[in-house]
Amino acid sequence: MNRQVIGLGVIGLGAMGSEMLGIAIDHPEYEVVLAADPARSAPGGIAHTRDAQRVIDHPDIDAVYIASPPSTHAGYAVQAMKAGKAVFCEKPLAVDLDEGAEMVSVAAELEAVNALNFVLSDRAASVEVGRALRAGEVGTVLGVDVRLLFPEWPRAFQREAAWVAGREQGGFLREVASHYLFLTDRLLGPLTRSHTRIDYGPAAETTASGLLAAADGVPVRVSGQVAAGPETYEWTLYGSKASYRITEWGRLLKGDGAGWREVTPDGPRGDERTRLTEFARAVRGEPTTLADFSAGLRVQRLIEGFHR
Image 1 (cartoon, helix red, strand yellow):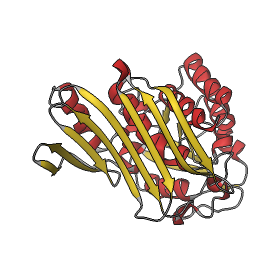
Image 2 (cartoon, one colour):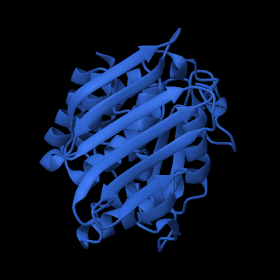
Image 3 (cartoon, one colour):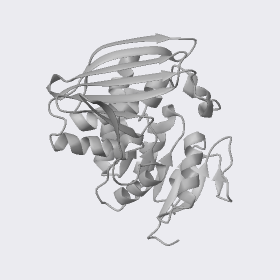
Image 4 (tube, helix red, strand yellow):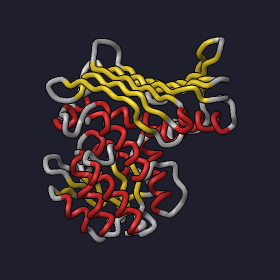
């Protein structure tokens, strides 16, 4: 194997695992060595196993991408880091808070390369809002609103993953709201929980609302529901000079007294391929835009606080 290329192992071949595997196969910085899933086979002639331990132990694998159900993240990640592998994990970091803390502790102790796949870590819209904040174009930050609506849960592409609909590991707070809380945490500092409310249906939550606070007491309001209406993903930062809204996972609007107008940020939009490239940078010891496990643990504590 050309050791300038990162030997990659994949654990979990659900919706995200299969998508990332397909991208990694054609990515010049990776060679996919082995994929593990107890029920699905790997496409394109990629070597496959039902046993994730074989991925962790494989001598030609430098890095492991984990896309298995959340309750398994900690076990696989800790073993992989102890085996000397870099780890790129899907969110949420974990469901159990002690397991999330263990992932952070082991990563720090071993100085292991670690990253969490938050979509908004490298979205061009997110980067542009960060630039506007640093440049003072927002003025005083007055608040943040996160608004989510799902006509059905789980969404169509997730139906085969039974855990997504369940209260123990799934729900839209862990699967979706976590991305927006990560973004708020990154731009405005660590968040604290003031008040939360959650209602459950037969399994996962059907409504959730919360009031959080960012640095300097900036209010962060979260509202999500499974209800009739168009699927909605909306994050709004309100400022005294200008406000910014990210919708549809990457569409950016800038607001002032004249209304909202669309902004087209420079650079690539940001997607799974660009985040795989960022992970390769991390493996090489270079700076990266990706979230690390510590950021994931801060978000996990907020999300699990809703469920208490």
